[in-house]
Image 1: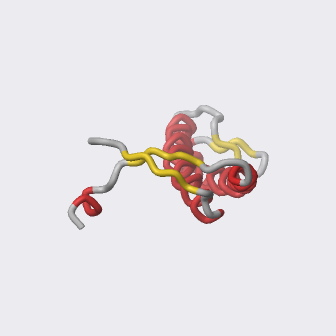
Image 2: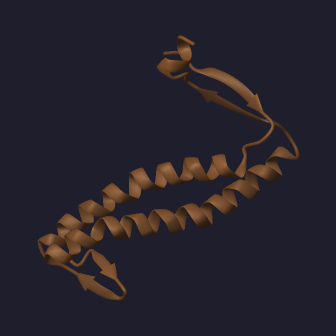
Length: 107
């Protein structure tokens, strides 16, 4: 598959948040579930409200911990990244490389 290059003036804030939400959600939730499995077997890897959760409660709480972490990271870092990219766009355009989806190739 070939990558195409496109020059853009700037990303919208929504696009930055969407990319960051997808990336943090699909990385932090699985890692959190893995930590929940460790907590299920007695490791103190899941903390909620200052309390270590182990056993079944740690396993059940782990996806929610991952979702909360993803939301916090998306909100905080999304704002920083969007402002940084906006500032960068004042000086020069951004060049991105992308690969078209199967749907776009035939339309």
